Length: 367
Image (cartoon, rainbow, N blue to C red; front, side):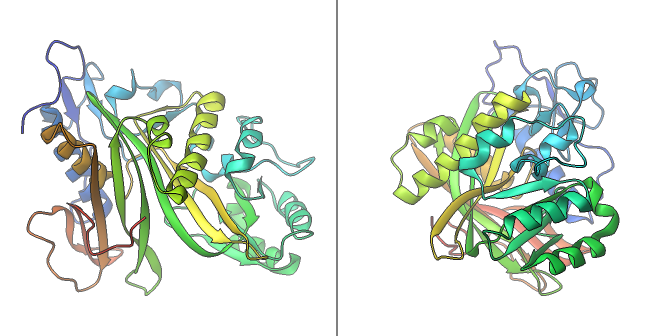
């Protein structure tokens, strides 16, 4: 594959893979596969030791703090924030009135700008504030969802119908409460969509698509993949594209969140991904709201790489559809043309298969 980089333009000279990769673990193997595939696409040599000068990094997670600030979005795949708190679910909601605990790096004005794009809710950092938030929300909402702000993949969540149930959740989570909780409206019949923008040297694409779930090794619902529609350009371009009305609404919510994050956080990101929920509130009214952001390598990244490759190979193409698929337990072999990230037995999750393909994968739901 030819490099998409213009040799006359100064840019990264090599791609640095993350050290300490364990190929037996699906997350590590996936990160390594993504890094190597991206290096081939960009025409960059691969190394495990970076100097920081002319390097392109593919970190495990978001970067935070002045010491880790990249030179530009064209030098890493992911996102950088001034403080680690800013990359968590904590920023989605405001603090409850007269909070007992306020983190030093709390971005006060952000939640006001996010109000129209998110569900009603609060972020809290103490049991006292959690009960105050629950008391206020339960005056107008019949059911609350409680989330730990650093949780991923739908884990570490609970539902409460009254203050006694909320108190039981707080007692069960104990030491996790001071790290931050989100308490928000719980909506029913949720479908989750992905909206995002991916920028690598020489290319920018934006996408909207639908996620699927699958049973994990414990029989619980887990992320099962995504089917995504890509265009060339940014989230702003996607918001102006000719899309079905539901897709336009979903993109608009994500774009509003993204713009607010840029204004208030000084965000630097080459990958911007937003989970947007479609569901119904207690009165049956449809709700569309951003649930959380991801500014690092994620489940949809393999599909994003395939779209970048396809646009580079077919300059006349205006749109591309790609999919990721994740399955647990005994499964069939991946398609022969798939980009396979993991096919083995993870020590924690058991037998797993992860791959990406052009097109709609295993007949996943269309957006």
